[in-house]
Length: 102
Length: 273
Image (cartoon, rainbow over all chains, first blue to last red; front, side, top):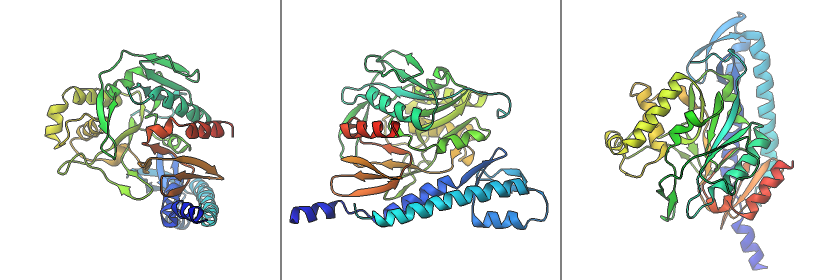
């Protein structure tokens, strides 16, 4: 009995560590290539593009290059990309909570 | 810099596999290649000096003469033979227009690297590394510049890439000079150092993010007892604890684990999914 408990404790996982690693993985997933640039899709970026009045604009990408954006096209892709990655994060986060003790 | 829209290009992965007296790197490459084929769905080329244990999974095999050995140290201070020279020759070895050069211990469980090919670049390098416990910003020495990781390199066959790899070769041949110039205390040659120095020189002796892979590489430094899949996660068990990580690319330093029956079974499980 005590051996079993000791083994279980040994295999106890650190939830905060696993949570951080999952977040990093999702931040990787949130990167989206567009028109030769690479963008990390964030709520701020989505909000900015949504409210921009013109159809064409230039945004700084991850590599600090100005990239020409077709606003509507970019927005549709970015929203879909963001939703997919965030859904995945939510799903895996819930799963992680369930298996926090191996 | 090449335009992405020029033509349809060949793309593939290149692995180096040189057995040492202690580690069967060819077998590790065989297992790594099987996962690459399944996950990245790209052709795989191997550069080796030993065809005996090669599996038939490779699309092309480049045989070269045996190299001299180097040494590396693990976390416990043990010394291992390590045959890491001549990595710079990848530019001439690679049969592909677009190449992913990966160390065979960097296991490709996701497709994130492929996103980078949607962009114009000559080469891309791994600037950041993390372990499950911490972020790691390695430098080449206490008063030296940041180190990048040569574990994974993406490159296109362009003039700038050619200059880059030639420069890495020059640094390897004159490592004593360059390590003094860049304040590297260790005399042991590492591709990480040579690639870092070449990148700094080629950027006009400056640190530049233009060539970086924009996310960190996850490295498992500890000795592993087993890895099991659970849905979209891997449960990595060590001697006295465990991590649960989302399925993602893992740089596994424990070579004995990569040669274990448990890892062999994991590879089979992944490729049969």
